[in-house]
Figure 1 (cartoon, helix red, strand yellow):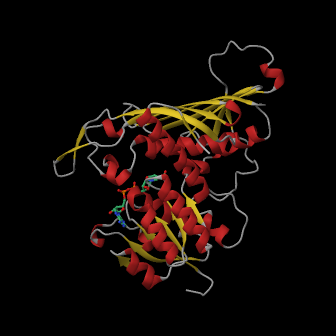
Figure 2 (cartoon, protein in one colour):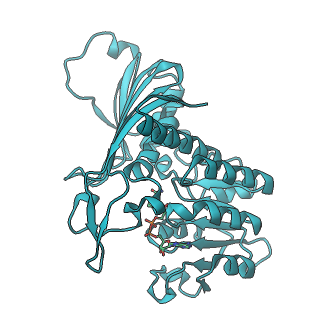
Figure 3 (cartoon, helix red, strand yellow):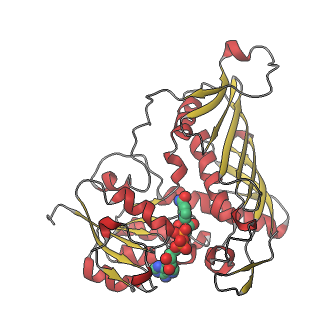
Length: 357
Ligand SMILES: NC(=O)c1ccc[n+]([C@@H]2O[C@H](COP(=O)([O-])OP(=O)(O)OC[C@H]3O[C@@H](n4cnc5c(N)ncnc54)[C@H](O)[C@@H]3O)[C@@H](O)[C@H]2O)c1
């Protein structure tokens, strides 16, 4: 390992750790120096390329012994805050999973600690990698739709309603902080801000728990204490109305995340499962007259556009650490989304609109 190599470690060796490892370990000049999870290392699913990397069950010991420059935090949400502060104390940059934290206070403390340590922090809003989302952002920023008039977004899954899906930390409010709202809703909150460039002024929402109990892998029954579905309204910059719906119990839907935006001169829609396509009818000539079509034409994305080649999250933090000017989702973006989540929880308790900022 050369002195200029970036030493990289991962905390939390579950599903999403593979996404981080696959993206970051393959970047030139990155050496994976440690993997950590409190469970028995024999049970971890480690990619073949990292089979020989030292394994730790204690994060502090790993940080002390391996001295990483960059740490991915891929644990249940409850641990994002403490592990981020720990990694920063050990001098590392942090690539943390979403949602950033359990509360706004935790997210604020993470961003303050990052700034004080002079390190970079990324939050893995992975849909910013989707080419269609990037292209839509460029169209709207270039004024192709004119002034934005309305936003509508849904993020629908079915997994929690399925009998075969066992109980997990995602159904425990003390470990997850949120259900569908923090798991999927936070992607909608960041995604709309990313695509439209509009911020949140005030929000009102409601949530439910439609699945009261789940069975774990060993047959034990547990109450579901998180929301399983949520809906909210947002007033965005300039008074634009955003309508949001998310659920983990929409039978038939695998991973359906769609953002639709109308402006004065057109409408577009992007969909997570169609990264190379956009639904789009826009331009003064096309929208001068009302259309009788019931849907928007589906078009292939151009082969090239400005942000197509931008490095994806979470790996984009690596060139940023090396001093390149890279657009990637940061702790500041995570904190903005956390404030919207916090305002929504307040709104759900009080039954009233909550103002941001
Ligand atoms: N960006 C995305 O699209 C995306 C997708 C999936 C998951 N996530 C996020 O990634 C995080 C992890 O989700 P997952 O699906 O990988 O969950 P998972 O249950 O598959 O894995 C979590 C791992 O963390 C370990 N862990 C628990 N407590 C820990 C601790 N204190 N220290 C170290 N490790 C600990 C568990 O043993 C487990 O191996 C969550 O915050 C989730 O919201 C994001």
